Image (cartoon, rainbow, N blue to C red; front, side, top):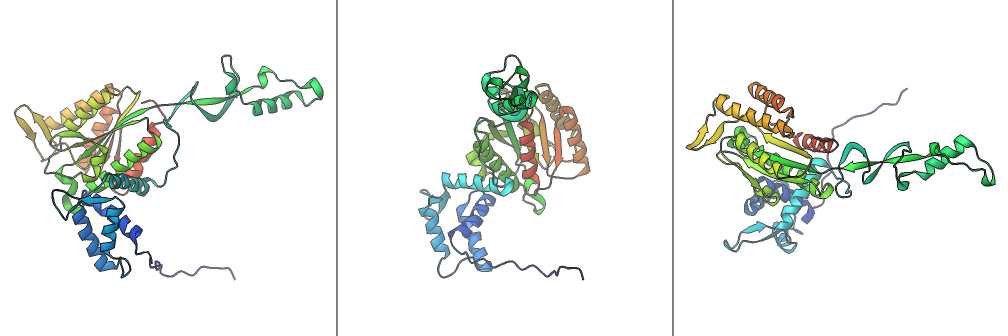
Length: 369
């Protein structure tokens, strides 16, 4: 009789941890969703505590709030007594939490750790070997491999019979490292919270995780974050937890213009734009005010957007579009936009957004754009 398996319903173990750490993880998520509103986050946490019993008689919500203050994660608002703000320590913790949640735990490495396909007089050894060439330095020679070759080619003699020739020498290739300038564009138009779906929170988490990744693994890189609605403006990384959607249309042109302006100032060979959006361009800024049309694809708006895609291509700046929507007519626009720019496009669910951006960022580090 062959051995078999017996299946039953999986029942998760009940957590016994009702202390600070378990509450803090939930609090960090709530602070991100509420755009840094400590009071609203604590209200939600209280409701969750009532429903799921997150605390007990030994450690209550009052203890948790006191610990948040003592550990430096929140401080009292001087203008509004009794209310709290998150601190710079919390902002950094939110970025790190986003990195762990989206990309997993990443091992730290040295600075400037991007690879290109080019080898030669670089600054980090690779695993690739080749024959010795005139001009190679002595420190590039792999002595272990070279001596092994000499023994195989000439045999092992005794005394002074050992022979090492130029043909025995092997050289370990060096890899060049490269700096990259990236602009991350985030759509904050009203549609990012329409239809009962919160699209802005995942976008914020991706931006915070990418910022933390660059800071930890690629500190020589440049990452600029801009948001675009009726207009476009640059924001600091520390502002990301507080980012909110506004009653805006989608001025993709303004976002692209600002992104290209920022990249022109960067003296790096690799430049790229990542754009997270869920809708079509619907707005332009003109001398007399705003030109808006939310009904269908407006030719005037689309043509100017495509012109900027072509301009970015001439500047050798690829644009990767992450479209959080699957409308057929939007896909046709994105396909045309991508073809004009010779960039890439992903039609991503919110769940897979972070992984796609992370993988694309790493791939683009290995080539000159």
